[in-house]
Amino acid sequence: MSKNIKGKIYDIQGFSVHDGPGIRTTVFLKGCPLRCPWCHSPESQEFQTELNWLNIRCLGIDDCGLCLGVCPRDAITKGPVAQNAAGEDIVYPLVDKTKCNDCGLCAKACKAQALYMCGTDRTIEEVMHRLLRDKPFFEESGGGVTVSGGECLCQPEFTRELLKQCKENGIHTAVDTTGFVKWETIASVLPYTDLFLYDLKCMDSSLHKQATGVPNELILENIKKIAAAGGRLWVRIPVIPLFNDSSGHFDNYGNFLSEIKDAVDLVQLLPYHKMGVSKYSRLLRNEKVFVAEPPSDKLMEERKKQLESYGLPVRIH
Ligand code: SF4
Ligand code: SF4
View (tube, protein in one colour):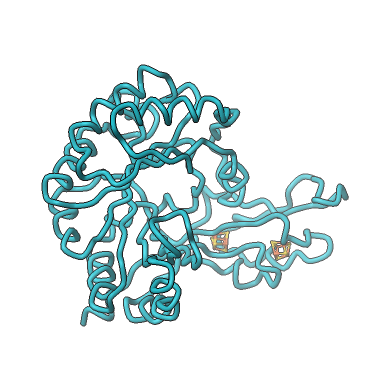
């Protein structure tokens, strides 16, 4: 039964005012085919439920240590002496992710919930039950439900059914997408999607691939097809220093978006910020994290004006 279709979800956030018009509840699905180094929700990237660790909750091995000895794969050992937020010496557990298979036993043992599992399988029925609670706020504010990720269209069956049920309950729907999915998948959610929040990260395909791991041809093709099929769009451009923030790059955005401007209700410029950086340590990953200074207000205003000169409605996020 469709109500029993399960999606892997890492968060449901109410009272969101950034993910479409009005007050919205955003359902975040796990898994993404892209690996943007500036990603502010790296916990969304992997498709499976995974172990996370939040140092500010951890009591340390000397005062707690409940996680030591529970791992059947010997992935948890004593780490070196570090400093906690109060500047005190503390010994944290060290998790070797190359040995860990995300079984969750240590998260069960951790009473402080410093170790916790990110990603829960939830049915359509369970999620709808949660969403319907917020319906009065949607009605009051002209809001609705946004399905986001990760890339929510990588769980197409769940996303489609969730959108369908929202529409059946008179709720406005938005899909937040990278656009890096088969056109058939997008076409299958089109009848139930009032608005697409569509990321355009970079107009140069080789640069796009270098940064995110995938080229952009499919993404550009799909946005044109959505426009041609009558879909409505909020285009989201993350403004990333030394990547896509040049005047020449924004002329490329302007020229491309001019072709589909009748379908574009808004272009949102999202200045790069460092919020995601601290999250990488929670994921127990050792990868190199992209860090840069955020673009200045002056630059953001200049790029806004530049796109407006192409007749596009633009807002800085
Ligand atoms: S059980 Fe939790 S709180 Fe205790 S040391 Fe381990 S991670 Fe920290
Ligand atoms: S989740 Fe990973 S570290 Fe924790 S007990 Fe399971 S295998 Fe060990």
